[in-house]
Image (tube, rainbow, N blue to C red; front, side):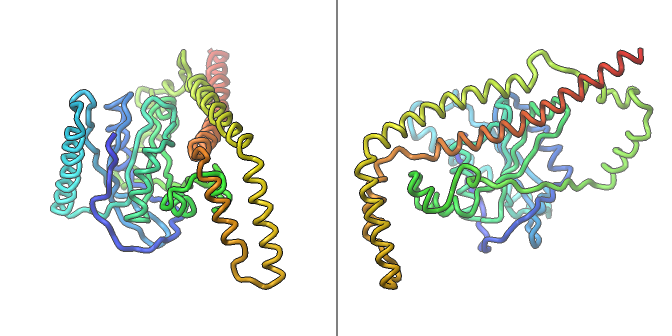
Length: 344
């Protein structure tokens, strides 16, 4: 997937968006686009406006898929595909203006394909950073088609935290940089609550479904939600967790080797920094230990970047949250099916 760049920059300051108001039309368009392209990961643009502390998403359009098989071995072919992709976005923005709908870019969406909700990669971070660096009040909607097929709408809104955006601008991902910015794996991204907004016609349809007899043809979807697949999402999520744990274990071995090789030197520099800072406070210096901090930063610069490990830890935490929810759903399904069988 080529990195999508915002087609229009809006000079606004960073505001604290506390919620996302998502139109039902956008949800249906995202679901249709993602399910038609399973198991591929697809992306698209989000349109709307920011009103106070709420981000209203009123429309969307999909990005065309760039098939790797159609690209040649040269970088020129890749550059031409990216140029066509950018031209497509410009043409779409002109079209939405002509039909007089909201054309302010408020983010993008991405499906997790068959990856059980997994989305946190360097490519995702670079794309989201590009949006936030230009537009700031934007989010990324991550849609999980596998979770939705199991009976629960899997769509969430994420953005990079303000502290991580500053770190990304400096491209410093060592453990020293994470410590200096007060960052850990839980502060890389932020989840923004989503409020679904339905039109009058959609509300009328939902009300009509409630009036239908239980387990009738109109409500046959209720029966399908009780089915338990042979390869349940719970088992597949555990497999992805095992793979991430294996990669995280390799990263930890690399970091342990670095610590053993440089612990004496870095420890000495850290002690010098603490000593100078203590003496500086006694002498009321404004910025004590600047030179010592630069030396410590240079010594830590040879360290393997820690961002991938932090991302893996965050992804594992997301998997744990999903496992908790899936476990509860599985128990409810089994008890519901058992009750129906006993009634018969």
